[in-house]
Image (cartoon, rainbow, N blue to C red; front, side, top):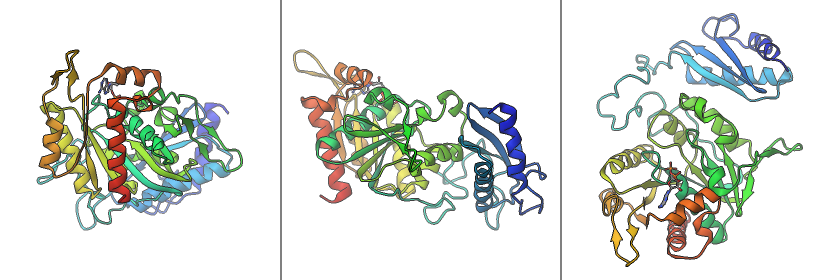
Amino acid sequence: MGDDDLTAMLQPAASRVRDPLTGRSVWLANMIRNPRPKGDDLIYDLHFEAEHSVDDRQRIAQAVEGNLRELGFSGKVYAMPAGAPPRMPGGRAPSGPAGAPPKGDPVKGMSGPGMGPHGGPIQKAPIEGVKHIIAVASGKGGVGKSTVSTNLAVSLVQQGFAVGLLDADIYGPSVPTMMGSSQRPMVDPATKQILPVESHGVKCLSMGHLVDPEEAMIWRGPMVMSAVRQFLQQASWKGLDYLIIDLPPGTGDAQLTLIQAVDLSGAVIVTTPQPVALADAVRGITMFRKLEVPLLGVVENMAYYELPDGTKDYVFGRDGGKDVAQRFETELLGQIPLQTSLRQGGDAGVPVALNEGPVADAFADIAKAVHAKVAGA
Ligand code: ADP
């Protein structure tokens, strides 16, 4: 199908959807803008006024997509919300993402519609057939979040659990490399479900398979969520004890939307011990607390480097993660050393937790602690 055919389909699809504000079709109301085909997929801007409620927004995007399907479109459809954010009930429209955080908001972007701990418009959806969903988060990139996600997943498998790993870090998806699961996932022709790629006993899916990370850099929360939702709701996760979600680093709009939309059993925070990383870790902890997601504990990564004579060099400072865990009255789940084998294992797609040794034992302990907290074992 050519680019022109793809965009031409939008007109009949959008002409059949009514805009509740103007009473016209969303096509004639000029809400559909800038369609841009990408391979077999279609991206377009869906332009709203502040008076469009969150429900209106979801309903319109879904209706347009439904009509596209009826017209035979089989690619992915991304409706990028544009225009004004929804007006809060009885109040002004909130300021845009560039606005300063409102007073008393400890994390930028944590106030506004849908950000309340109770009953925001974002619905938490359980994932069919999955017992527990665990988020692995970090305040900043490069601290070892994916290393912990992959090794935690493998350790849980070794302890007899059925485990899935969803790499939602659209800004730097590294799970395919670290798990050796870089094949594109297949779709089951009968159920139309995405089939995760199984590696080391873990069912893996990565956003890297769905989106181009360079393009994703500018995505806002709802766009990230619509991409993640495809993997959460349309993949074959049935029968899992644990689904680990490797979150994008940080505490921005994308993370908030995702965390609010998923029924998380708990979150693991990964940090390195130096002060700059800890400040970001604290923001992460605050975010989960505010969203009422149970904090399972902190993993301090790159905690020390063991010298040949057995002494420890605290390259990034000592016990920073431990101190943060104490301060926030949560568990220090483990202190993982800086070790070449960890990096090599990640690069080779063979997580160190698969081998024997003190680091594998440390990850096994983290997995046991997570299970004990989540399942009350
Ligand atoms: P993040 O997910 O936080 O961005 P990664 O897990 O991708 O971080 O880690 C970044 C890099 O650092 C990777 O190459 C990884 O193999 C390496 N790395 C992570 N933890 C360790 C460690 N404890 N020792 C050595 N290398 C590590």
